[in-house]
Amino acid sequence: MQCQPCSEQDRKTAADYWCIECEEALCESCKSQHLSFKLSKNHNVSTFSPIEESVVSHIEKEEAVCVVKDGCDMCEEHPGKFLEYICINHEKACCVLCKRQYHRNCSKVEKVDDIVDDTTLTTTYKDLLSAIGERKTYLTEMAVKEKSNLMKIETIKDKCIEELTNTRITINEYLDSLQNEVEKENTKKTRIRC
Image (cartoon, rainbow, N blue to C red):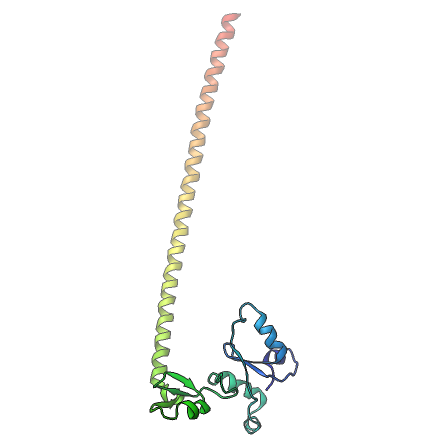
């Protein structure tokens, strides 16, 4: 299997590691970089054995990456094995080897595909659509309120400007009248002296 970050840069490097969180195949160099980044330094990166040649011969290399990405998570204990079973007794996902090794005597070990039925997925899908619809309605209402608030602020601003203008006119008129009075008084005093 090819290292996915290298493949995106048109380099062909064999992948020896798998990041469970990112669901991405990594080479040694990319693994080191991946674990050095702040966002991915705590990711669970494990080694895995390459997909068996018989499987790869039936699937094109690009599709092999998709199988790993779209499939179940990888088993930490058995690299290269998918977690395709669930032990109901222990409430734990397991691969085929874990099933044989640790859950042989458990009464309820079922395939993940058998447990997740279409009705559950349909219900979950409908619930998600409903939640998205509710959020959209809420956001639309918030946008309308925000627009209304902005219009109110604009109206208040206009009123404030009008009041300031009127106050300035009143103050100017008062100052003009004071100036006139002082000038009249001054003129009277000048006439009396002469």
